[in-house]
Length: 281
Image 1 (cartoon, rainbow, N blue to C red):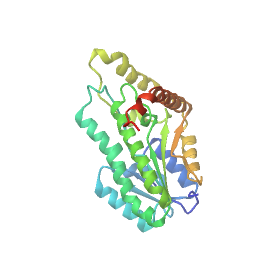
Image 2 (image 1 turned 90 degrees about the horizontal axis):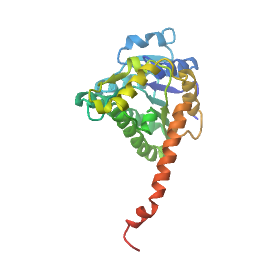
Image 3 (image 1 turned 45 degrees about the horizontal axis):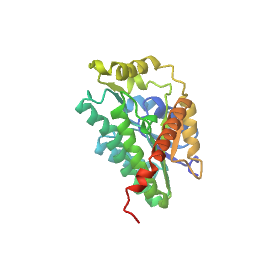
Image 4 (image 1 turned 180 degrees about the vertical axis):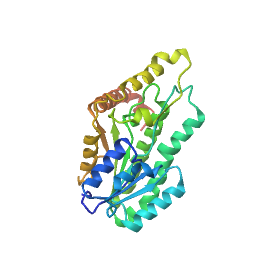
């Protein structure tokens, strides 16, 4: 069990959306909370009047110097983080064929390599303390790909696979790992945290184009409640055996379970083929 009033939380990407809501609730519960954003002015209101147990820091997770400074400041004020929430990142929609090279690389720098670097910076303190909980905000897209979201899904799938390895390495040291996979939640993600390369190829209008139109039309109407999502994330840090996966929202739950059931059925259907590719006994 980690979430006590003395717990130290470090949350990336707190200027909006789930990150901001989680930061607000963690602060309200009396945790020691480090809130971060690329523009620190956007998070100053979170810490005003609460400076004794909060710290607002500028942080671009693609900048190794920013990461080093932020972790150093955290250790100096609060000690080792008990909970690291890797929330910073953004979305990108396009067809696979029309993906922009610069956009793709920037996406992976933030969603993948920045997250990896942030975690590496915090792990030594958690390892020494023999406790900690790393929460990665991935997405339903970390388990299910969809038209128009190939590169975004690839970035989230990368984190999911990496997290499996981190579980195996961290568990003997008292370090828990959870990937949170939200479905559609009512945040400003589509307006502020989504890049797009609009499709111009007619063959993709009914797939990628339709997906982009649906995303724009859905914004502000998503069924997921960010406040309840934050409550669920805090709750898993109070669990002695936190989950490896936490899918949030009915839409996300239904999409993920249908995909995984179909995948297992497909793999089992080729069981004989799989077994027959070993050397004969």
